[in-house]
Amino acid sequence: MLIATALCGETDDDVVVRRFRRSMVGWFWRLPFGIGLSTLRACLKLSLGRSTSGVRSAGNGAAMRAPALGVALAKEPERRRALGRRLAEVTHTHPAGIDGARFCAELAALCAQSDGSEMGTAPSRWTAMRQAALQMGDPQMVEAVCRAGELAESGASPEEVRATLGTTGWVVHSVGICAWAFVAHEGMDAVRAVIRAGGDTDTHAAIVGAWIGALHGPDILPRALVTNLQPGPFGRAHIEALAAAVESDAPPPRFSATLALLRNLSLYPVVIAHVLWRLVRR
Image (cartoon, rainbow, N blue to C red):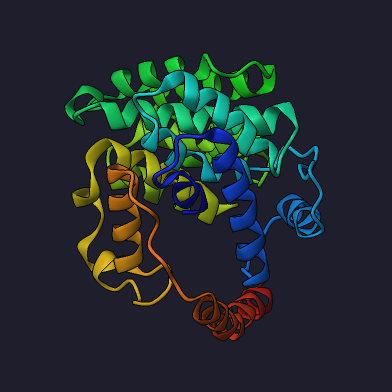
């Protein structure tokens, strides 16, 4: 949502980057849970006013945010690719981290330009993956996508996929497992596949969910989950208003930073209890 907010009603990429940097600082001081170490370090640099905030990390934070850029700038490939690099470098400067973000944005753009039926088969989705991979120069990233496609084509078991591709927060693992799920499974089954694979499930589900949403539109999302989204900052109404603002080049919707902070704080006991419960069960 931070990238979408930065893009609303703005055509000057310098302004977009400045907006994104400010949004990252605000998001950081609202105390989000599950923040990656590299993103945390970058946000601290941003908070101190550092002009170069990115960390030489191959984490997957930039890749997770990138699909929003791909959808918003689906018909502006040159701007999308140049801006995608600049936005990724706000937090991640490692070539693999940048490549992962550009790949995720590129595939999201291809999905947004498709009517859904064009990628209705695994071979057609694999073709789109290869096209998106042309934006990557890091050999590890290219190899991960190629291996993902091969595993999808061979019908490899989830256990084999996990062992081969990995499911950690390293962006090479994340791009590989997400690419496999997108090619091997249709619709929401792809999201379920990366969740069952384990590892960094929230990030992987966010990436694959963005691709699926860009390909099929909001109707593909489970109605019960959408209906149960809580109101308030970044709730359903805010997300829908933000999507409309991006599409119409309108200003982003406003929200209460205080309420957002209080909401995050109220969820910390739930998160801590869940972590402790998982540790006890091991």
